[in-house]
Image (cartoon, rainbow, N blue to C red):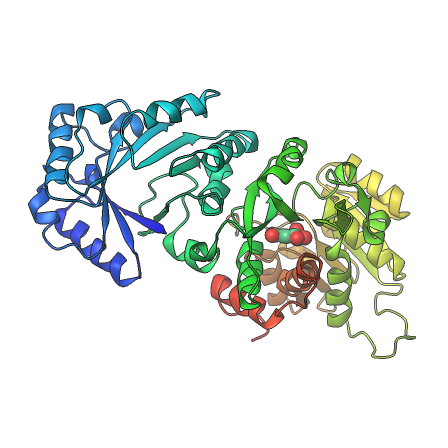
Length: 500
Ligand code: SKM
């Protein structure tokens, strides 16, 4: 079950928002009474209850807004119990002072806003001595290993436990708790009020993760990268899994460069069967693989990892085929399989030298294009150019090196930095230029807008994104991806797509 958290400064707004949450389908609502600016009038708030509820008055030290006397707070908690609220949230250091009464269930909670302590199990044990119906542990995770420990705590606990790693790095604990028996997870409702870092919204948990359908049998997939909040892989894969009746879920894993190995150590424990890999891990993931498909060998880049039939972690590069198919389609590839690629002898400038740039560079070079690579860090473009057997130019020369096709493989212009462009307007003087941005979020990046204004042919990252995801879906499930559904989910998330 999803528990929708709401908190407002005014009594009337709190009651209105509770009604709105009920209308939107919330089955359980947490009232953060600490957000009220005036003294809480519980009889007024609890008069009509549109849904079952959790009553919470969070102290400042635990991330809440309660600034009144502690005595008063505990008095309000007792009053709420006397008024028969469904759940009351009691911090583990005061829970013993508040007696069980009536049907109200006790959530004994512990918050740590600084870190995830090593003695997490002891903290949970202490909570268990306070007569809980549910134990709730919420700690700040600084890295994947912290968050994985939190998930493990919930998974191994003998009593109903909600174990949440706060921070974006812990978002997956808010989703996968359902697999490991958490009685519920918390979600945001009002986009203007964020109660905890990494908390997902109610619509996102329902529509992007199908949270209500996750159970102990659900198979877990991931998308791993840094940043990861923008990734629409979970939304399109989860919608596709559910459309085909597959009990699978994809969760986001925020793993910074240098921490991929730790992530891999816990992959099997978390029960991950496959993983989409994005910036900055497409090259660094390769030494961790047990088996590589040809496209990975050829390009030195990997965007998909899955357990093969022999139980070996196998790497694939679905970007490679997706990119070549997208670019050849926009350049007018002939139906005749014998016909040369439209990329033959074209001058192609590639911006970036990471995983996607590698796939592009090897792919277009193989199709007979003359490739030039440029990157902010010269040594990376020079070294990739040597591997591919092509030219590199310095980043400062990029605007004057453009010939027939330019492909952006850097994250410049990606959400949320949507006003950035890797090339200035002066780079798009020739209307015969083909400009391809591999970024899909947003679809119409600043670079593409500038290029289109000057009459260039443009190709957005959406087409490539759907193609690479469809190939991944086949690897993960053995079934053809519902690409129309993938597109319609992207449309819901990004607004109307360009070719519509
Ligand atoms: O290659 C893809 C990757 O599979 C997933 C992704 C994403 O979720 O943003 C982007 C590309 O790097």
